[in-house]
Length: 243
Image (tube, rainbow, N blue to C red; front, side, top):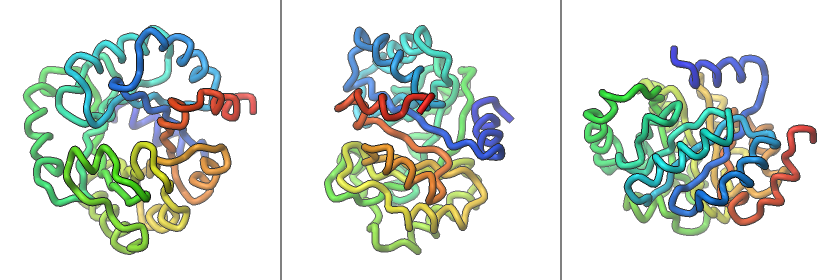
């Protein structure tokens, strides 16, 4: 079993909740990285996710290399496209958009990436990715042209997540989307977690420590925060490792 996934499982077994900071290469200036990463290193963050829906070629590679100079936290790719794959990261979430029905994002992009991945020393973690409605259109929805799953249809969300596990996914990721108006509701998180035997990641719309704790209490094993830190770095003060 590869290192990043093995460490996630070990942390969960020990009762530790995980926090990933999502950095979008398309929205982040590399020159501001040292100060930002100093705050990340001083926070409760356990992982750094890198990726976005639309990123220029080479930007991910440059950003990951810069992050590696500033932090010892594992860097995990959260790619919106094949162009965002770089072996400078520690692992890759091999995302299949199982909430949609577009074959391009269920398997097409994955096939396209294989010739590149075959030559790289990069841990690949199969991940079932579910986009849940949040009150506004997100970049993921625009790029993939898939509709998010209705928040009220909890049983369908649970069944879709479970289908991902049965297909062999190692992680399930419930995503409200960048800048979401509504984060994933606790009853959705708890219902999905109850039916899963693999780790559950939750992201999108979490802007306060209280929302973070609600997600953890509902069953999220890892929470991903991006926009909140992009818009208000003071949020790091609420999540310092000594708080």
